[in-house]
Length: 297
Image (cartoon, rainbow, N blue to C red):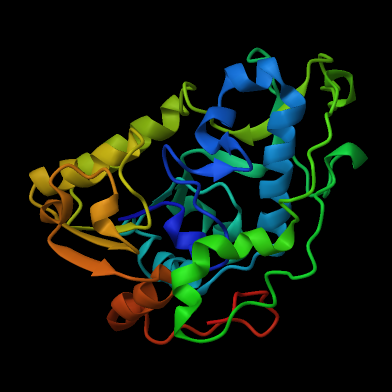
């Protein structure tokens, strides 16, 4: 099993906004990812997510996304491999990860759904921006112009900032300008799971049953272990006799109880480089399709 977090996509240039202290402008990112924040100022929340949508659309899957997708093709058909991802950026989809072998715990950033819990309206929307008022102020550089050399992985978390101008003042977006649901006329919102919201019960039940059937190896990739229920999966697997490895830039900075001792193997560094190497005995060399928009190594 692979348990993935924001660090998987850091090598593609997307910031992690990890935990308390992860800032966007002068706002703590986690405080904007709540139903309460949306109710108070939907325009501000949409500005934050419009920036994230813009960056996700500009980013490219990296070698780790493709490695996991290849492992899923080789091992996933018979239930031998499953990926649980907390990422909402859509990069696993664009790496052609088989959909039947991956669970998107926190939804999809590029989906838009109704804010009314009793309404089932939910569609993919790739417009950037979805309304003119949410256009991202662009900087001169882009994700395609990344810093070369060994320092690249060290600044991976900051690369996404190159696609928008953070110094440009935020313009107020009025509530009445937020798109409305065509079914019930309530405000539309990003198709992600916010803090305080329930995850899909059927998905969680399926995951629990699959884990209880026996997982011999769990690879934790780029997640700090601060958010449930994902944080409980790896310790549960280890308690049942499975082995757990972690790939992350800084394992000690996460919220894993026991720190590095919580894992059988620890690999610190850029997941986009380490994961393909770890999986090479199972999948061989990763061949990225010529027509792919994969991130440069």
